[in-house]
Image (cartoon, rainbow, N blue to C red):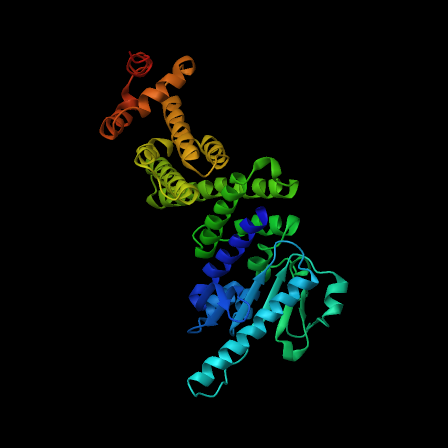
Amino acid sequence: MTRFIHDRFAKELLEELLSPLGMVNIGRDVTSEVREIDVYFTPGLAIPEYSETLGLLGKMASKTAIFEPFRNLANVGEVISCIVKLWDLRGELGRGARRKNAPYDAELPRLWILTPTASKALLEGFGAIPNSENWVDGIYFLPEHWQSAIVAIHQLPETPETLWLRILGKGGVQQRAISQLSALAASDPLRIIALELLYRLQSNLVADTPQELEPEERELIMAIAPLFREQIQAAEQRARAKGLEQGLEQGLERGLERGRQEQQRLILENFLRVRFGESSPKMTAFLSPISKLSAAEFTVLLLAISMLTVDQSGREQAVKLLAESVLKMSVTNLQDILPQAVTNLLALSMAELTLFVEQLPHLSDAELTERLGKIPD
């Protein structure tokens, strides 16, 4: 069910972005008939600079808030359910105050219903109207005492201020927001967080039954893929800048290559951890040689791994893909014995495997064929 995959992505992204500003509770239960709030946010110490970086989302987080993101258009029943959660929470907070014999003067949280689109009939039915003097287009407020607003993400202006909400949109709106991450500095913490969660989203979508993916989901997967290449290119640019500062052409080339390899190793290590939970010892043994692949070959490898299932079988296939890539880097004519060579390589103990991988660049084709090409007796 891809809807739940997107729901988890939305909750995780909001949690990561809002955590510096206060306490974020994902999946907070409220009493009565048990209902779960998607994201419950309580402000902490104000950080004006960070709030400004979050743009519209930072403005929404200036007070206690509930965020209810929807992957598909929120219907009337779903909006009502969100409002019921809000009022159940108010009752719970009031009862808690009375048990402590304390006055209940807490401000009711603002409910933000985030929906990729919103029909005119839906908005009019709830009496939701814009507040153009204080808020951008696409935000519709219910009458004052309801303390609620519907955010029609597809109507938000496509500006940096709305980026972190448009990433939670759908179709072209979401894809354009993803592409606009490129405008952020490669070292920007928010960019790094978003990329890691997008990689995870891509992995989870691919892990879902591929034949059931809608064209829109397939397009989203393809929109995320180029970000792998951007990370690598950013590493190359940083290495080039470092080399230029040294003022030596030789230092430039070494710095460029070291920076590229270091970045590729980090990307692969993080990708495997996000994809499979943790890297196995055999995966780790192949990280250094794999980091020496060209950017194009490296991207192809990542995409191939992203197509594997997220289970033990997928982990085993990932190790085989890594082993194949490492062998192909060292031997030009290995196609006839490649399956057997991979099998023999992975049959080695960890100590033997680690030593063999270190020696691999120095082995001739004949030596490698002799050591890995034979079928065991």
